[in-house]
Length: 405
Image: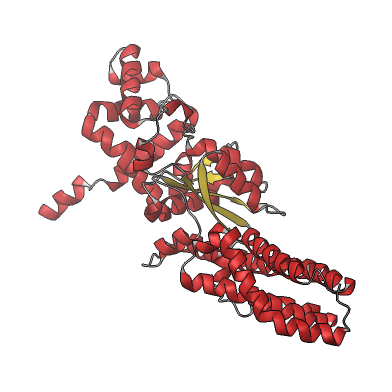
């Protein structure tokens, strides 16, 4: 063991710093495969970090009170993108190699120097973790702002050319159909729990908070078509859940109050249509005394149309009135009569001069054509509103005759 004063030790360390840096780079190539696979520019940046660590140790050994500056000394020479290309685990592997090289070179030095190496390695490890933690926090804040911007764009329907790249930057894995879910923001919003629930349901979500409203854009996180074709055993594939099942699973993450699910749209580009329906339904959901949670926005079509929602009015006319009118005026007249007579089969049959079984058959055909069953109280309300709006949209034949005269 060579006995030196601290001043002599410092001079010796400065003399061998170049040798230590060269030995460190050689050891990196020998022991860390990911280092050798890096592009030359990035490998050079990692080498600069290793050399800065050695230089910083010598400065720290001279003045241990300089600990707070370790991170700035070591990582200041590295480009910012290095944090995104080198993981924390790889950084700790890098630190271990540097410390091993230094320890091996100073093993014949004083006990004080060996203890200093151990203490410095601890400090530099904590400093590295702090650097990565700060970077992750900044990234998280940026992602939250970007996600809020994307959700706002979807709600407003104001798309631009940068929206797809913003969505991709958020790691959106949704493919195909999309729905928007609107509810009340809870007092303690657990975003991570919402995302875990969505992943469990094979879905992906974009989350936006607008005051008291919590908005989720939901997409099924299914594999792309080419990847799905490569699946050997369909039985092992994740089940495909309906959007109502996904919304029901996400329901505990919302605050108390109404929860409205917009209609399904083909893709994220059309999500604003589902969002408009969900928001319109959310604004009138209180008018349905026994509304389920969650409730489909299309189940609130009568309330939405009364509130002046043009999308609800068009949906009722296009999905109920016009299909029945195009299919059979007989079905349309039967539905009018059935609803006007308080959903009484006998009264309807008497008015139409047919047998009650004929009315039952026609009601069944109506359900097959439009998908709503007129015998249910809630669905009867929807159909009644559709008939009223459809008749209002029809041109007035009397006005034509007056104009001709």
